Image (cartoon, rainbow, N blue to C red; front, side, top):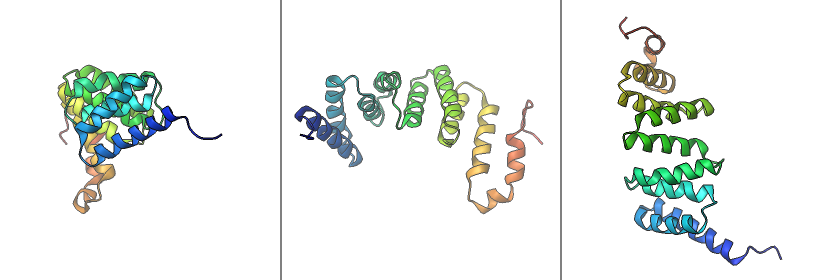
Length: 171
């Protein structure tokens, strides 16, 4: 017949509604719908990812982590970089800085074009008291992405300091 079965159509409608609710700021309602979907469809990496996100936006990072981990284990493809960033960031928010660093380092290697991953890695490094490495990462990202004329004037110098491997960032 070509028509989707009723359970699939209901699932898609509920999923779309949950995403619309979140986009319009109705995050608590969105979370309730996504929790129901995650319970009914535990094999869906996409639903698990969105359910994690629903918790995350409400400041419920600890509750978000199991959903993010499930989405990762299920092999989420589309939006995987965002999933890994969210998972690493959630680890950091709950104080598991080592796990955050490991996750964000791996993610940054897997997705070298996603600069946000390196910024969040710098935050995790800062939490681990690895300030120099964190500053070097942030300097590189600043120098390579800024459109500010004053930053651009000093881009070469900023990149010089970002590239320093020695004990300090002094000239």
